[in-house]
Image (tube, rainbow, N blue to C red):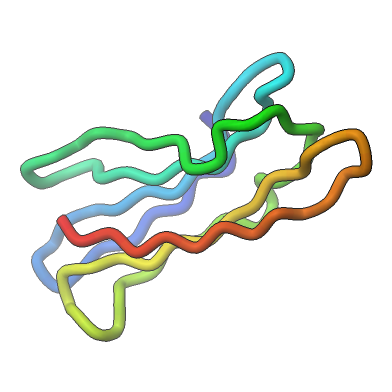
Length: 92
């Protein structure tokens, strides 16, 4: 896992955005919870990618619900590396 970003919500839960992968699946954008009832990590992109993507990952507390998180990241897919932005809202 690399390029992690952390945030806390109003309940004190810790959310995580990150890059992970290997081989043709490097990097992948993922999110998850480090604390709370469900600490599962999810790969959001899960497609063949071509480098880059980890420099612009972020997670913040959600604005409409103090318990939610908003995360953003992207990956590049070959043969013409095109950035594919991803936006995720999580509610623990």
